[in-house]
Amino acid sequence: MSTPARPALREAPYGYTVSLVPGASDALAGFVDTLWKPSGTVTPRVKELVFLRTSIVNQCHT
Image 1 (spheres, helix red, strand yellow):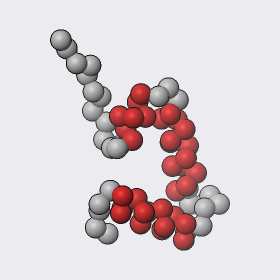
Image 2: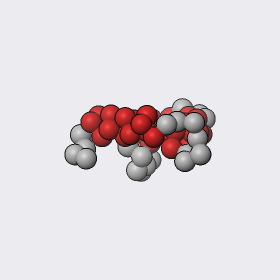
Image 3: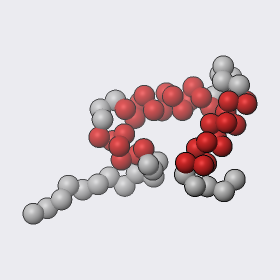
Image 4: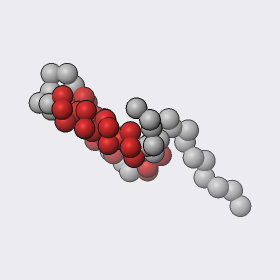
């Protein structure tokens, strides 16, 4: 019995999950672009809070 090949994606933990849902990678890329775009409407304070929360979830020491 063979198992399906899992794509090697570096955007863990979302990379594999996004590959399973059609169109999800474009939606995620649009969200990330909107959030981190320097000319966007998201304030630097919100960007810092998102960064810190993501670091906590990913157990990164910042």
